[in-house]
Image (tube, rainbow, N blue to C red; front, side, top):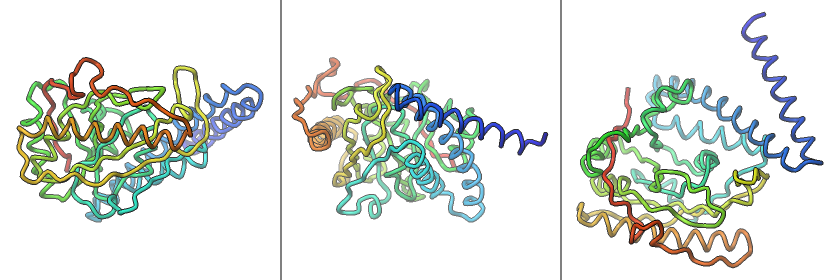
Length: 307
């Protein structure tokens, strides 16, 4: 049997299993979690393979900076078709289409944030990722080819020094980046933000580009891993006005980080209240013992891959 035959058999079998779990979910609701999880994983693999091919072609054409945008959109439409989940973007001032370069930041709730990026990702933008992902087949190849900002979390440099190279390349290439300042997923049941790390803000200040907060309503009603919830649904996203950094220095980063986090937390609660139609108490902005919601630890090494 040829490779294409094996691949066809695998995909047919995988599809049958997914459809089987969707059918079971009519009687056993938790089966829907398995069905959507399987659909999401195969969708991610398919789009990573597509992304590798698209990155190679676009690099030859000199347009590699839109590789992540086109791959993100492919994942958006594939997930909507196979899982019924999507993110609805509110961007009345077309910030996503007109602000470049910039450092886009947003909350990091679960693995489903990959789909959120698929729905909001602007052109001429790249994600950040830990350097170990370079070694992951397909996904790592795609990230490398499409200009991902890789972060070495084992590096002991402070955040200011670590972001200097990335800042220079952002200005030279007019390349935006998207970062999760929490640094890890919260898996929260209700809207909240973990303490922010300062790397994204050092990067914006050094590059002299605005910070663009992207606020996502809490979506634990759609995906909540602790009780195996994974439902179809639409999750609202709001793009806030850019926050300028011209004239700011490293000494201003703490306050910039704190005020941006506070703004995002308020908007996140309001957006969730509107989406879920229920009152939500404002969480403490000084949780986890950080005092002001800002991590004091040192940062990371970052470069924008161009090879």
